[in-house]
Amino acid sequence: MNKIRTRFAPSPTGYLHVGGLRTALYNYLFAKKYNGNFLLRIEDTDQARMVKGADKQLLGILSLFKLKYDNKPVYQSKRLKVYKNFADQLVKAGKAYYCFCTPERLTKMREEQIANKKPPMYDGTCRDLMHEQVEQNLSSGKPYVIRLKVPLNKIINFTDLIRGEVSFNSETIDDQVLIKSDGYPTYHLANVVDDHEMGITHVIRGEEWLPSTPKHILLYEAFGWEKPAFAHLPLLLNQDRTKLSKRQGDVAVEDYLKNGYLPNALLNFIALLGWNPGEGSTKEIFSLDELVKEFDLTKINKAGAVFDIEKLNWLNGLYIRKLKVKELAKLCKPYLKQIKNSKMIEKIVTVEQERLKKLSDIAQNINFFSDKKIQYDPNLLVWKKSTRTATIENLVKLEDYLMTLKETDFKTVKNLEDKVTSWIKQNNYGVGDYLWPMRVALSGQQNSPSPFEIAWVLGKKITLKRINEAQNKLR
Ligand code: GLU
Image (cartoon, rainbow, N blue to C red; front, side, top):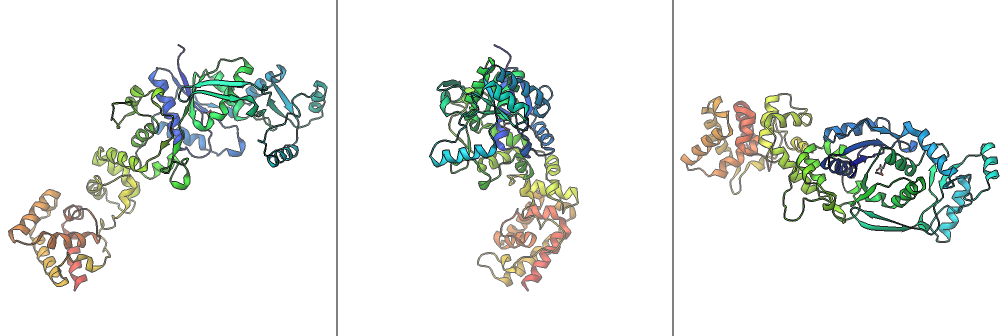
């Protein structure tokens, strides 16, 4: 068998869709599994959709996810002549033709077709123009496009590696434009020419491109080129099984990264959208190398894959918990701009690590981790059936006790917890009567980390100050 060569062929439109990342990943995995090549092609010929700098952003994302491509990326915008030459070749061979129909005529034609409940398609006006007519139009400088002469009444079959046998009737296929009036190629022409010239053996792409495939097959046949194998990946779906859309959540990889999903976790999650390691395996955590070993196109589902954000949160949480505190602190820093002290950040991260689903969560409910006064409703300090007066008394006793502790007693959460709980026990106090108001005095929140964790982060001085302030709030 020939060496396997796959490609990722994004259009640089300003962001990478999560489906695009999956396409890139599967192309990478398939190529690497068989010691083949994974190539990158930037499909930047649609001037209207181009966004400046988007290609650089794409390259950055691929490198962040360690999807290393072989060779230099191919930019279609640098190959306009190549496409034009190939289109001319098809015209000469009678497989494509010049079309001089004006946009106004085409719009009118389409409107009439729609009014008559017919599918809008080119009506073939220029398909069989006389040679002299064509020459005359060209020399008088009439604008034109080049269209593919789609054979009439032909069945186009191919075997998709995921979907199996697929067949289309050429009657449903428009005489596709190959070269636009501005001289730029369409997606179809450039895509087929490049896949051929880059020696692509397997075209792996999203299901939305399936209707384009018969057009591509006709082009391969018109050129007399060998066709690659095709594999169309299942759609990504929202929870309600509609097509994944921005309205129901983020679709841009950039947004997930911004919110603090770790690249490894995101990639792991994306790998499982439509692929699983096969029956009998319940493994869900995969590194990129493990994926290369286990991946195969035969294990991809035909059915759409639901993008389950809860599962992503769960996976990301697992990856976050595997990080060392120092690493996590570094990653969380951009979300904690208000906290300048890096020791403090490390402590906060230690306390929050267990609970984090994504890095940005660290910024939620952390206002109490500072030396500033905190605001809250004093009634929150009162535990269950206790009273304001009793709560004041308890907080006074607690303050007196904590005052007797040394600075070093605040060095670990465990030590602090041992000290305070044994003091409570020795005195036969109710645990909730002390630890509830202590926690609220330190956090001002209904829910928060434990009082010992917060006291450990804040240190002795601020802890005592907050407990004292709480008494004043109740008085
Ligand atoms: N440029 C197309 C895209 O943006 C490529 C589709 C294909 O892989 O053929 O997805």
